[in-house]
Image (cartoon, rainbow over all chains, first blue to last red; front, top):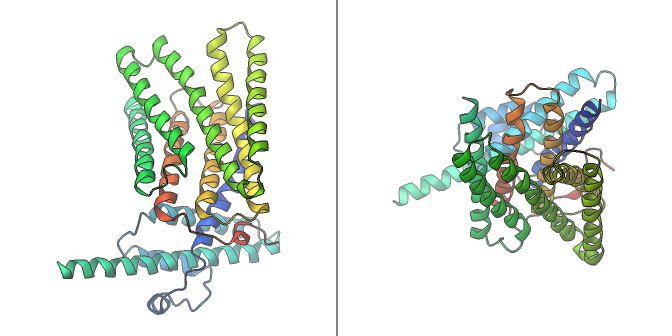
Length: 133
Length: 231
């Protein structure tokens, strides 16, 4: 009984900290303005939508990793799936949750686009260094 | 096979702890986050000590059990010091340093006395049981304090990215550890759950390393974006 109670409480706090952790990752890239190039490639003008995320992730796989951003991307990808699950399961009962989850998924999309921007800039830097050699 | 998986996680965790200290020195943040570094240095030293006893006497020996259970509260105390140092950072501008230190000291004393009171009723070996009980209670206190600290971060609109992510990682670690501890009560001996808490030991140095490498001391975030429901 006690173990079950500890388990339920700890999973609830784990979820709370996980959501905040993902939001802190996304908040750190929210001020980054996307380059013209990334806007063209991704089709994101200024505001991303929830549907952008899987598409941008596919593009990310084509670029070399930058400063170990893979862990953060995985965490956000898991958060994105969690929001998708929420939309399918709870959102039909609580409509306000749907718009919130949409906004969150859009933030995930923007985070991935910023990561793509950084990876492209990093690839360019690598190419420049190679050509100098 | 289970022994090798456990050893692999052990090596990986120790390596990540060393990586954090090296990154911290390289980035010039060693003294800025002194207690975080101290915790990992202690953890690496403890791992080396445990490994020596492990190879000399074996995992099932009394010697290994004593070393394990006596070093565990030492590490938990160091983690408690990390948490208090993060409290001091968040509240530094309010000038509450003296009150926080006093509160932390009283809380620690209370936890020690409570652990002793629980153990005193038991007929088992007092010192080993006390070390185990103190460690578990300090973990619980740590989880509650991290939750309070996170509330303070939101209330005080903390903007320092590194501080925010260090606290969140700690919260994730404590919550996941408590969940795995509860799960162990349901699982059989030798199941995968047993390795979960061990693997969690890799999470803290990994996430702190990423924070240290990705963000500078000047990095800032918009505090309003941390709240799940906009106010």
